[in-house]
Length: 439
Image (cartoon, rainbow, N blue to C red; front, side, top):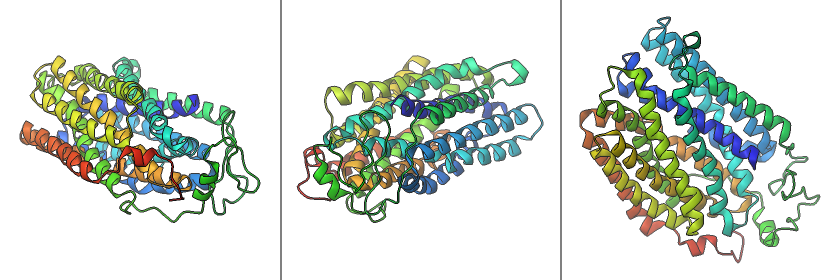
């Protein structure tokens, strides 16, 4: 679990460190805000396409191999992004070509980095009972959340004068940290490559104490009290589609709410620069932006480490309560005028999304059989990526036209999720209860 934690933490920390400095880099390059947001679109699109592919392959090739591939994609992307942005800030490339090269290098993360999160999620989901699934996935989500605390906290410290790295320092530093995580993963995580073709079921893997052992004839795990049902679940599944009836309510909630979350994240850095008057001093913006993102990340951890396990929230309760809290935080963020109120509003919104995301993830997982967990994790990752294709750029564009156009749309999306979810999401009792027959 420590190694799985590290995989998610490093990628999250690197990405949020990048988000801390990108508004300042865009301002230094004299690039409009919306183009900085659009630079992520290609990566997000690749994530949507590739995440389900890697998720299905993890069922055949093993979760460890996909985690390693994801880390390699992350490392390569961060190193190249840092190099091309340094070239742009140093005058070796024009702003236009620096941004194009950044988008291309970022595409490596969307294409290959998307292999890791579905593998981690499927690894955990396939080894936890249904009644514990929300808490287990919340714990994994919190590793990502902890990374979002560490990334903004470290980013200002990584803005190094050494070799003129400046604002690109966090990219290079996290590429090195990612390389160390890859070495640990390859060295310490037991090999989980399937030893035979998984005919009619997902293969179990030997991954240390407490993990399922490989069954010679495909029987259910002896230590799983629901083993007989899981054996029925393990019939070779058909390919899952986004909007099939079992998944449709959770996918719609995740997609609409994910767009709202992506818009908040896209706007927040530029909001800090505008409200604090830092447009003329972009290098000074990394600290305040990082502080706001860190406040949001801590609130997310509070939701995932504190509220969900303390109140034993099921998927439906976490999703609906979280999206209402997110709407309230967004309204406060839109009205904020100083660093304190900006951080508070963003923290409240992040608290809400910190409840919402594990809720929709667990709901998607619980809607399908154990044999379909790899595919379900791919759907979750793909939906999350789809939220970032155009939503951040749309949010920033509307924000630049009028503050309340951007924030008003976000609030409207949150309320739409609540209304649709209230009618369409299955109750927590049904989701977490024992099934009498295989799905």
